[in-house]
Amino acid sequence: MHVICPELTKAQWRSSSYSNAAGGDCLEVADDVPGAVPVRDSKRSRGPVLFIPADAWVAFVDDVKRARPITTDR
Image 1 (cartoon, helix red, strand yellow):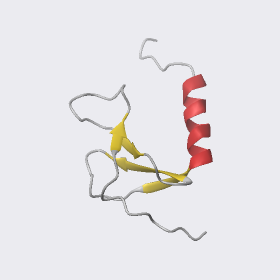
Image 2 (cartoon, one colour):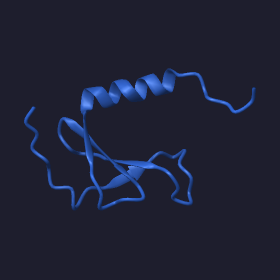
Image 3 (cartoon, helix red, strand yellow):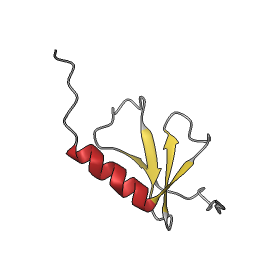
């Protein structure tokens, strides 16, 4: 598969509203990249970026939203 990596220096990265405000172990995503969702580790802003096909990202988010919440109670 041939992928052309877009310029991301001006990308607006965001994390989930459920993320820890202390900047812990979070993933960030950037919007406005046609056909893909760039994903990176919030602790490594200059590190590697994964480009997830947009349709796969939508399916992933939908599956997460439908999933049963994970609890630590046993």
